[in-house]
Image (tube, rainbow, N blue to C red; front, side, top):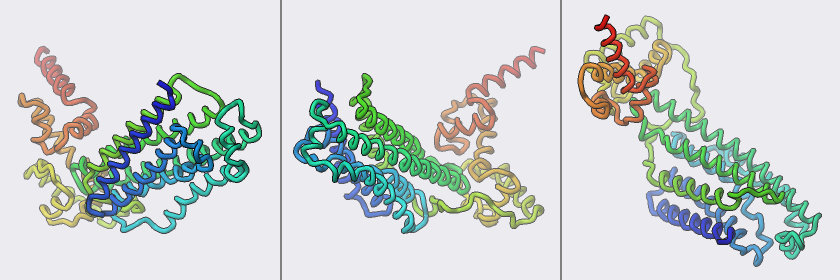
Amino acid sequence: MNIDVVQTIIYSSMVGVTVLALVDVLSKEKQKPSIFLAGLLLLLQLNVLGELFLYSGAYQYAPALVGAQLPIRMLLGPALYLYAYACMSANSAPSQRTYLIALTGPVLAILPMLPFVFGLSSAEKLALADPLTRNPEHYKLALFMCVGTMLVFVVFTGVYLAATLQLHRRHCLQLMDKFSSIERQSMAWFKVVLILWGLAWFMYSVEYVMVFFGWRWFGTGIVLPLFEAVVLIAFAHLALKQAVLDDSEKGKPNESETRTTTLSEQRMTQISAKLKKVMFEDHIFMDEELSLNKLSSAIGISENHISETLSQYLQMNFFHFVNSYRIELAKTLLLTTDKLVSTIVYEVGFNSKSTFNTAFKKQTGLTPSAFKKQEKTQVQEKNAN
């Protein structure tokens, strides 16, 4: 089958995916995350239509539109950032400055396009599609446009991907200050998809330039569209499944991560003792929905004072403090009972086996099974001696 036909089929499928996703989003209640998601999906749709315009051969009927999607593509990075901001930030809306900075990408992309757009006629642009008819000087203009816009795209989008990853990291850290379980609120899937989008767009930029230089490999024109399609489907599916978080489950992106000490050491010692007492005696950590707010109500100390004591005196956040007690109980149950790990996970307060395994290995350096095996071996050796 001809490569152009395969590409046309793949990009047509991507158009269908984005249309269905847009219909789903627009049918839901209009909330800030869904509005920004709709905007992102619309930009993805326009970008995919631009690729379909080229690979389907439709450019022959409107050569003046060739490259029209390039400035639009510059908005994908900012759109991802704004979607993440809407999902993870308790702030009412991004600043006007944020939108103005986002528009610099399309402006920078348009600059290297000007000689090509206004310097060549439609017939001269069409002639570039065939090596036998292309004018070398005109081809240089096309090459300058492609390389120039791709360099802008890589740098501009890379900055926004890094900013979005940083936003997600801060969101998770702020959740750890408030909750003992963060699986639902952390949007862990978003980080993975974000990295995959970055990889797809970088691959696109490299391949786009390679084609103009006449460099090809066995996967040219097939691997990248397929990868883009998989990432798009995964993103659309997961984004549509994501529950909207309320403001208490979000942080403020500009909020400082450093804390200043306002409590005396004596007061923090008293609070620390009270925290340890409620953990040891009441086993409050076994509540899988335990939050800073719940703990504050249980011991009659403000959330701010507990947070300050944890970060400044005990040198840990709420998430790690609570889970350290869960792991200690899990270690005891592993060594003194025949209960399965899958049972212990939920009994000690975790609501996810993956979170339990990660926390257990971080605290002990071993997986639960390896820990149990090592402890039993040590006991046997001790008895033998």
